[in-house]
Image 1 (cartoon, rainbow, N blue to C red):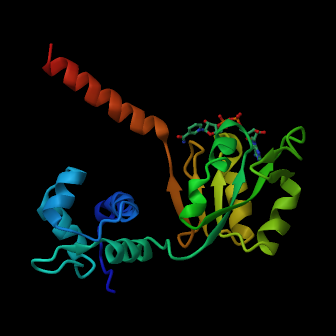
Image 2 (image 1 turned 90 degrees about the vertical axis):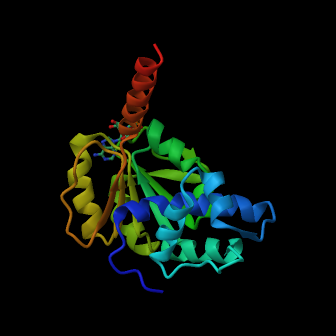
Amino acid sequence: MEERGISQAVIQRLPRYFRYLGELKDEGVERISSKELSELMKVTASQIRQDLNNFGGFGQQGYGYNVEYLYQEIGKILGLDKTHHFIIIGAGNLGRALGNYINFERRGFIFSGMFDQNLDLVGMEVRGIKVQPMESMERFIKENDIDIAVLTIPKAGAVAVAERLVQNGIKAIWNFAHVDLNVPENIQVENVHLSDSLMKLSYNLNRYMRENE
Ligand code: NAI
């Protein structure tokens, strides 16, 4: 399947398609038209057709989309047909919340290890995974085929920890620390700022209140 020059905007929408299709599949729905999918997802049918045409389109005239096939194909595009092992650095509130979330496994992301510089936390278990000291991190990454690291530490230490992770073979970082990481271009970084999402909510709430005063 060709995937040349697909915009980030399209890529950002794919997980949502994947989620909806997963739910349809679980409900036993075998096929769906772009119109039905558009009503369900509250996006235009033409947007759906355009998005999916980026990948050669999956629909058939007069038939619509085969839910199972589309789900599998989008999963492949998102790399969800492979298994990834991840570690969490920072066993605080956020790190533990992420470690406790079981649905990552359903998507092929296996929670494999957890590390913290606070020795009081070492040995604590999060969903059967023991927190280890930072000194054990390098060896663990190599021995357990870890490709993703989740950074849930304050920004002060994040840049240095990211460098250590990269030196030891980590290929992707899911970064919750509020700082831009200085890593080589071949390392994939996804920055997450929940407060950005909250500010967007605040903006929409304010606009709604202004318009309905
Ligand atoms: P927390 O204080 O409960 O946990 C932080 C943990 O990181 C502590 O256990 C601490 O010992 C450990 N740590 C600190 N520096 C470290 C280092 N250099 N190496 C290894 N471990 C280290 O904090 P919480 O609530 O879990 O938040 C973690 C960070 O994530 C905070 O800095 C916060 O600003 C950020 N955050 C980001 C969000 C986002 O949307 N991006 C949302 C919530 C928090």
